[in-house]
Length: 254
Image 1 (cartoon, rainbow, N blue to C red):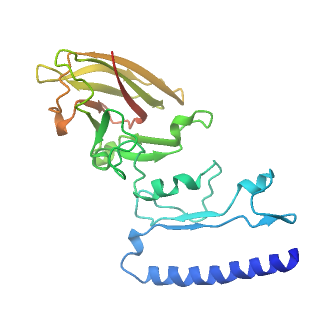
Image 2 (image 1 turned 120 degrees about the vertical axis):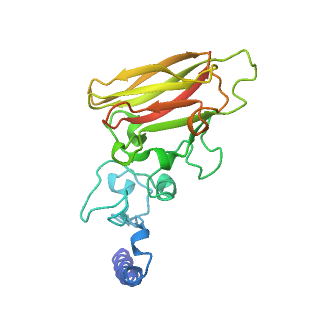
Image 3 (image 1 turned 45 degrees about the vertical axis):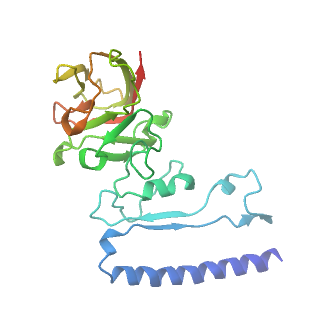
């Protein structure tokens, strides 16, 4: 029985492969070919006469996942490329929803999703999304955003939720930034002050450790009124030509 089921399973794969070829041929002949990402997801039938994923064997944790993006896009793939780091189907929609792989914070797939008193302003227009940056023993590189100086994306802008501070006199907070320490460039944290100017709270000189690092910066005297550039309260700025990468910007009351 097992052999007959395997035979029929492989026959269904052959049929699905032929039908997928027809879809791709039609796509290639259409005007949307260079604006379409193809995702093919398979399933794990079983092995050693055990069905599906009801075992602890390593192969049971795996299934086919093929992604092909147009070569002219930021997400463009190269034929034959293999990714050895773990991937999850749970995150597949999130990754594919935007071709630039916007971060899970403030990417506006669902308004307010994952935002905690802080919203990134125009993420796609001011920064680039990145996946799997840095060493595998640190989780921060799974999602990241960074500068792209070559295209003029040299600042990230953030707006506070108006409910963050309810007292007009209470304008103190601390900002935690998790950044990738690659290269020897600098980046700066600026905020919109109560006197109407943008002031620098910190400037970080990277040391090229190749690790994710964090810094916590106290801020006193900020206006938190969304009156800075692009309506921001906070800004991460690139003062040189080296692109910097960030995982997290978090704000806390003091």
